Image (cartoon, rainbow, N blue to C red):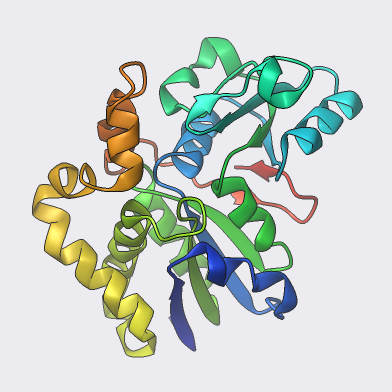
Amino acid sequence: MDLLKLDVLLSPVEFEALPGRDLSTTCCVVFDVLRATSTMTVALANGATGILPCGTTDEALAARETYPDLLLAGERGGLRITAEVSGSVDFDLGNSPREMVAEAISGRQLAMTTTNGTRALKACAGARRVWIGGFLNLSALGQAIRDSRPERLLLVCAGTGEVEALEDVIGAGALCDLLWDDLGQSASDAALIARDHYLNSCDQLYESISQAKNARRLLSIPDLADDVEFCLQRDAYPVVGEMRSNGWVSV
């Protein structure tokens, strides 16, 4: 590939500045390993026809006004959004990839809002292409990037709240490592940092990521604890979701 630059945004502070940048020659990959981009990948693999990332619950509720058959999915504090949180209705689904079974979502469209992942996706609007990243689709994602031959590749770590999330940095590092023979000479220091994090943890991936803040929170909630190991399965769902110019994510 004739790539000019490979860079990684490690924190939410960095992606929040993206709307002011010219991304017309940049391809972005958003990583919210625990769990938004992992959940989107599973939903698309199991037949969801489109996912609309929404920054707020109000935005998701407004989307349902336009598309009455839309399923509402999302979380606040890791938990499915309730009527108390949304101000009107319980959401149909949370943000667990294990909820995204074909019986629930095949042939359906979703409006999805999460604490960080959907915000990161919306911040990338205007990029040449925007892909959904994670361990679940890592190799398929690498092939999509090679096929696209981007001039600039920007890996966006969604983080948690306003700070970095270890699992996203390691996920971005895994993609850097996968593409290193093609892209290593064009890598920024942040890409080097992400790759080093991955190489230092790849032999004990679950053990490393289970120490992260998001993982510890999920592991403390019995119904969500299995999501951590689930999201770390490499290449279990070889589907690459892409956010289109209309804001919808589809295959």
